[in-house]
Image 1 (tube, rainbow, N blue to C red):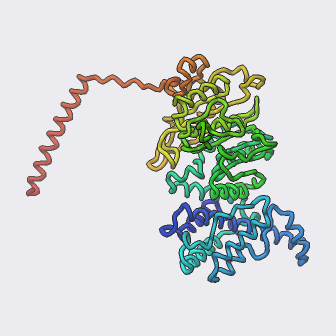
Image 2: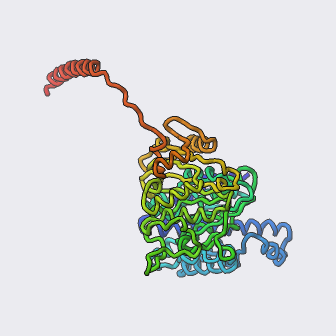
Image 3: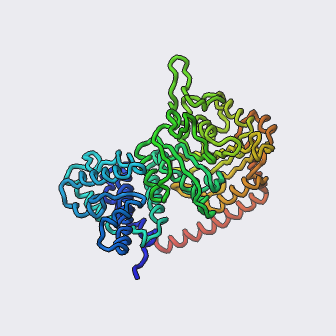
Length: 508
């Protein structure tokens, strides 16, 4: 009986494959080569696995086998598999051969993979070096991935998706500020997905989806309850990151997801009948305080928007936080939609146009919760962040129209500390979810604020205004402290005397 390959073993092989590029190629570039090769190996092993299964069924009738294979999730054209490229690993034009294979795969699977490989060039002098070095690196890459057998009959499909997420997380940990362009830390994605409360039948959207991890986590909340009835939608402005998201969806068996490539604020592409599509759940970790985010009318200095998303007010050009929030709220279904978004703390209290937008959102009774998280959770920034939850069921005619309070949670002090990156523990996540869902008042942790209280604070949502976390300092007994100091000084004198005696005996 063949020993089953474990998740850890696959992850180790994959991370080891990165040694081919370390020190010579920028990680921001080589991550795309590694992840693309993982994708190619997966579809090659899946195709071969299914081919072998039908061969047992139909014998040597190749035409019948291929006809049955044409009904699979994807088509792998002849000569384009990982194993075809393995046979060419000593060719002097190896990079060109890989490019051709990917181009054919993309062409034969236009509906699912159109454009996915357009930004990846395995024949690049700039990224992979001159011919001799490039061929050596690509040959090593093929050898590394040849150690993996990703056949569905031999490995759980979840392991493949988990491996892809593992690599993305590892690349993000070394990418510094660039990590925010493609990755939200797993525990934060989990928290946001649970707070969004998705259910079977929901249409779920992430308008700044990065590599798609948050969308997948939100979908998994529904799958964990025994249903696969949902639809995923996303948009991403970075072409390379969009490609990662498409492959990520495919590897997680969610290739029906509609992931668009474009700038959500200036060119929203999730459109139906020239109107913004509406969703049951909208989640996002948008770029913090994005500068120069909008198309400006030169004459009146007004942000142009065909879809009228900024009717509550135009966010400042130098900070796009409320532009993303406004977009998300306008794309949530009336009277039922939910929005969960990660924001920098400035969103809670900044004034001017942002203050006016915030006030209108509160007056509309859309804001349901403000949750403060610890500092240092992101690779991109050490600052603490918050989660805002907006609930359109609080609108007139919605299930929660009578709800007029807002849950404030200060979870900033409960986390696992690390020198590199702090993390939320499972218990921390559970406490936040339980407090929010049950709308609990917990001393020094949470508070349920009524509208009048928020109005009294001029619609400032800064969490310390609502959750008192002040800890009284323990009183110090000066007399006893003085006695303790005198006692310690006497003991120190005795020890110093003994040391002098020891040193004298040693002739020092």
